[in-house]
Amino acid sequence: MTTAIAHPNIALVKYWGKRDARLNLPAAGSFSVTLAGMQTRTTVDFDDDLAVDEVSIDGAVVGGRPAQRVSDFLDLVRGAAGLTSRARVTSANDFPTAAGLASSASGFAALAMAASGAAGLDLTPSELSVLARRGSGSAARSIFGGFVEMKAGARADGTDAFAVSVASGEEFPLECLVAVTVEGPKKVSSTVGMNHTMESSPYYDEWIATVEPAIATAKTAVSERDFEALARVAEASCLQMHASAIAADPGVLYWRGVTVELIHHVRELRADGANAFFSIDAGPHVKVFTVPSEAERVAESLRDVDGVVDVIHARIGGAAEVVA
Ligand code: PMV
Image (tube, rainbow, N blue to C red; front, side, top):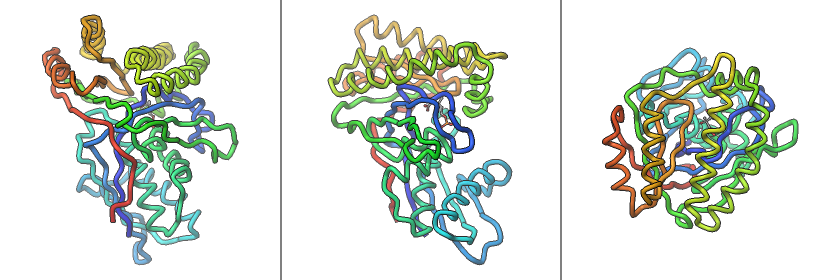
């Protein structure tokens, strides 16, 4: 039996498109920050007495698609470890799933660590990242803390498609304010959204062509602690990803009115001299990055935007780890 924790992450250069659906291989890399103060905690116990995998999330036994996703993932671990026993999986998030923070990222990162540990596999961080990627593309990044680059890789088997640590949060301390919007997620899942973009958006190839140059710019901005440069490339990547999705047929539009208001609000803050930039994923909520000395003031101003129901304050967090 092994228990592991992992934190969500937010991509500053987005992942949006797969080069292989079965192995969940990204069409391009991505670049993210792992958050502190929020976590998924997952325990896995392989037990010969079980006839089927038993999955409970946030205190409730789950079936259907979520349970199947976990079972399919466990099959990968069983395959690698030569195990046939079923497992008891208990997982809990200490942050609201409705906050639009990809719980699949922290969820599959924690599951990869706990399941491989419980199965007796001794995986390197890169191997754990490859494994987590099979559950969810963004989960590959949550194996690591701080600033993280996901490599698209070139191999057909995906063994070179894993994340690497680029810098720690101490090197360039940022804070993330999640503006939770009134319209909850009536979701087109990221997999459905990105596949549909790939199949029907005339801008898909152009979007993919932006990614690797943006990662290089973001890495330079982090190494030079250049907030303005990071702000520009992160907002551009976010808007370019959403533009490709909006241009699909029919368009995939994750924004609500409040999302657009928040974009304007953050731009105005920056025009007034504040350090703040936005990022938006497959939902209506807006993540605002700022510096520690301005976080309180920026958070206050976000609370005043009509349609914002909560602002969650997070710092940069560490790697996933086995805790028991
Ligand atoms: O990991 P997935 O398959 O849920 O995809 C994540 C997609 C985005 O959150 C929109 C972007 C990203 O890079 O995290």
